[in-house]
Length: 313
Length: 273
Image (cartoon, rainbow over all chains, first blue to last red; front, side, top):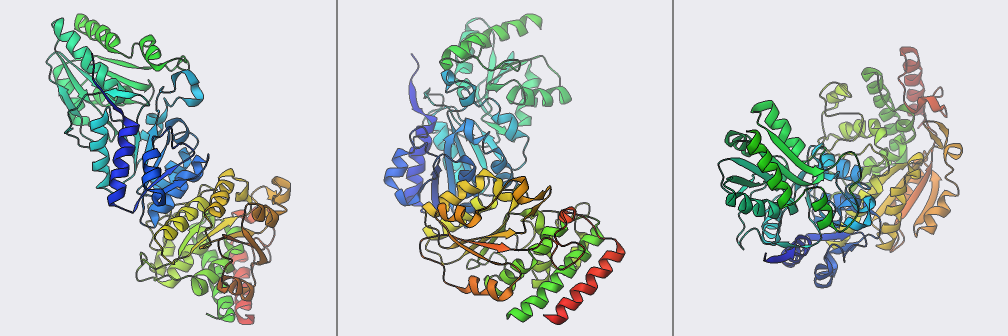
């Protein structure tokens, strides 16, 4: 049975409270989402560094940009669906274009709120933000990686959008997660093909690695946690091994698969399979695990794709 | 500067911005002229800024929320020495940093604006951050009246009074014209002062071309615990008879004849200041 750690949102906000105790310039903003963002610890421990803006995401991002302009280190913590749609222009102009040191923690991203419908899904956010220069897009996959990511981000002054899910995550990394923004992490070696995953899809990729190994298929597994800027070198190296499967909790348009395919097709074409949410319909609503299974976004979906590619090859 | 000098300076800024628009063959003319006195009062009278050190920690912060009126701001920043005046010739040219909206790669410009309805949130964040740090700097933002239809303005208005940001002054360039015509016909703003008061602000109305009134208000100690809005009644196209209160001059480039007429009128205003 898999061992689970904290949800990434909890891991992030606990660590943020630790960092905030040491640095009074760190400020957390939320839009009536302290519960869903797991900001309770921060708000209780550091009330003078906590800013509630009410249900007003546009003002939330604009204020964060203003706080950064006077030297604060703002973290905006709110659901991905609202940050990346309602306040997209503020992210574009006030943060990315103005180069303000604002870090956005977009919680319950993708279809975390599976049963709540498209209003609460964010399967467009990577595509929207990858099309904007000036903001990094990062999807960590577990507790340890999230903590390592946040510590790394605290050392720089550049904008970032960090998308995490809602649920506690299986442990992928050991307590000392090695992590470099913009550089894919190779989690498993392999010689037949490569599975490239991000965020909550990294754990199923490891499950698929084990299943496929039992069937005699050697799959390399890459954690492409940073989607902007994308690690092209890692993708080219994967194409040197063989076919590529990508898997993501995002629309098939404009996310990991589409972006990796652009690099592959213009440099070193190899067969690919892109596992993602469909473009022709809104994701079916329901518990996210069941939705993932329906669309093949799990170990079995990955194994099917791998077998097909090996047969075709 | 005293009001008389400020009036002369404002006439000069109007000349500079019209020349710049004429050379570039592009620009937002009417709103730049309506806001020229407000910006002059801020940059030559009210605000603490240091052209030699644009990032001076003790400066007052300014955000041009109505970013399309960047012409006046650029001419003022150049005149104050934030960057060489000759650079104004590059306005809107290929590859320039002096683009048609505020660009914070230009010394003295704090934030990139241009999409309307953003500046008050940014200013609210600045004012809140300064308060949290116990710093005395003040924050000023200039908004258009048409811009007030953006919902984000009222999100910010709510937050600024909730956080009692008395270090924040918002100014509305109330020229009553937006690109499609009369603001009251496009989307009524009145009773404007009452709206701001209902959001917990101290609201002041004055003539936005009256330097004495502007400077008296900027020098007055604002009410404690409340942000302040100054609704500055202005005339779009102010200073050039042919452009005053004419909606089509929201943007537009004068021909040589109109430019010459404008220069004569502004020289007269400078002499009569």
